[in-house]
Length: 191
Image 1 (cartoon, one colour):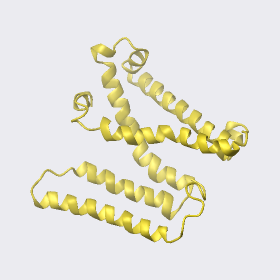
Image 2 (tube, helix red, strand yellow; image 1 turned 90 degrees about the vertical axis):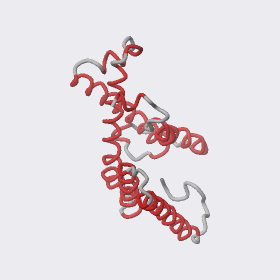
Image 3 (tube, rainbow, N blue to C red; image 1 turned 180 degrees about the horizontal axis):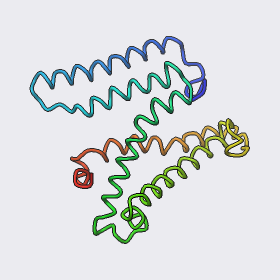
Image 4 (cartoon, rainbow, N blue to C red; image 1 turned 180 degrees about the vertical axis):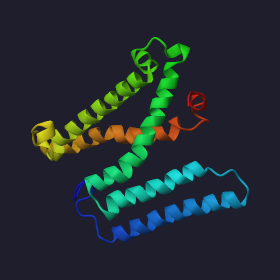
């Protein structure tokens, strides 16, 4: 994100208000969790750990340090790597099911573990490289040594940026459904 990405003339009064809203939302989440514990309801410790760690990582990488490196180390590695392991385990389990046995991905993922890991990692790397290249060549122009020089997108940036944000947004939306056992009964079986 860069300065003026969202609203060019956002009043400064919004910053402390947004901070208060952020703190209130986290506090509401924490109070709800404590009430569930006090009432003897089941506690999702894993979910609480993920929410707390995510809040801390985003704060560290974006607010406290605001550098690509700090964000990558504190956010991408801490949730991206475990997420990829879950996706790999799920995909490998799905590849072993009878209805998936004939697909190319299934053939590559259900074989020897090392080959499956290499194929999966190479696929993720290729997709990430292409996405990053599209961002850099069309909008950022930060790493021409890696992606080549790009062209100035001009006013088309207003269309390009949201289109390039679709994979990330899709990731968050799908997370709300894919990793819940109620909406995905295969999850427990495959993991």
